[in-house]
Length: 215
Image 1: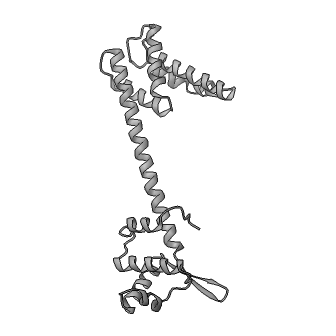
Image 2: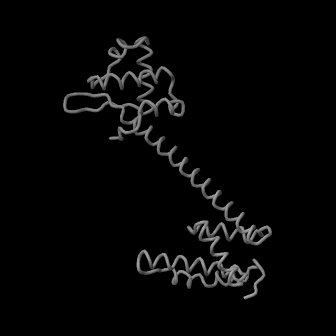
Image 3: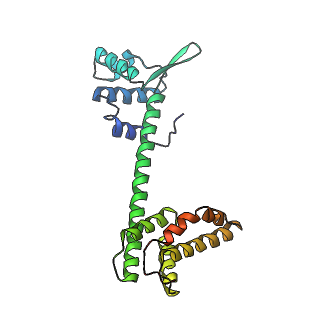
């Protein structure tokens, strides 16, 4: 059973065009829902005609269309038949989930871009110059690994305070941050083994021109 916490009527109004429903079909669906809630399990054309201004033929066409679109169904409980809107509710819930996923992805993308822009701004301020494409790429990678703005900026500050002006040094400091956090939270870290496996890549990164390498 699709959760009742979500407003069925709101979702139907928001999505009926996407479901290719006519206004007559929309009205029939609302009336079916109303009649079911009033305690009428089996909704017939005649019952709908008593409550609506649509004529019997129009209602028949709507019901046939809704069945063809698999938005309503008839279920059998023993010798009794009931009209169910569960297929429609499932479709609407699916549309709602899709919308929420899109919204969440947009929020994450906006937050990510804001985070990256903040780091770019701080780096350029600390270095007193623009960033190179290589630097920009690497910063994006750090953010994608889950490092926060504060961690990345502090790592640069730590590197510069030590007189270290290489991409490798900032990588190493961020690695230290992560190991420390893992040990504090879990008492152990697996980062060292992952770092060893990526040693060749790390060496390549270290050889990439970033700042003046005076290590």
